[in-house]
Length: 319
Image (cartoon, helix red, strand yellow):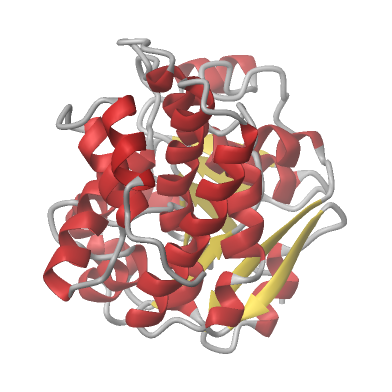
């Protein structure tokens, strides 16, 4: 039996997934609070301009209607996820919920999997993450992501298509943390390039940042193999080297001294996640120098020059 799909959240990534999954004529619903412009123009000009919606893609502002689908991809901003699920938990019981947001909730310190399980304990939860820019997915360019769930072979088949290839994993914690932590390192790499520290410095930050990601994720039960895959290293390489990445672009602008580094209406998931991860790491005695440096710069406690000096003055040790 064919499974129906709805994407909840019409940001760039959610919109691109809805376009990709409906391109072959599969019926897909895209939910947003305000659909007036999208319904008329048949594209999301505010978030992902230039990509017309396939005929089989339906937009709706009726959440109850969208939630009738068999599989719900939740693409809300990470910091809004908890409130969204709590306010609408009666609609999501016994559903398959695939979280597509990347980060750690600042108010609770929880990731998307824990938030879904707390709010909707009867739901089947999965995580979709990995190196995929919305514009590439919407164009139909080849993209590979990781889908983590408890026995998700059927789900993998339903959500994959000719240009969107999903690899299966059972490590929900590792996949979720890989997607969250790479945004912090991407901001650090953007800061380095923006401040004129050079590509060698970026390579060092990317490498040491990846070690930091592994350290934090393993402490929370994730597998190193997961972090070495698409949802960890793959996503990190993409996000930390391209100005298409909002987190990298934000760090780049901040490093250049742009006081308006974040464009109005743009969600920089790594900002809240960095603060949340730094708090957790300090409580659990996990060494996170790159994360701490990013947070100190974001909060104005260190200048870029002071942050550089602090990192370079750390004790010499084995890699």
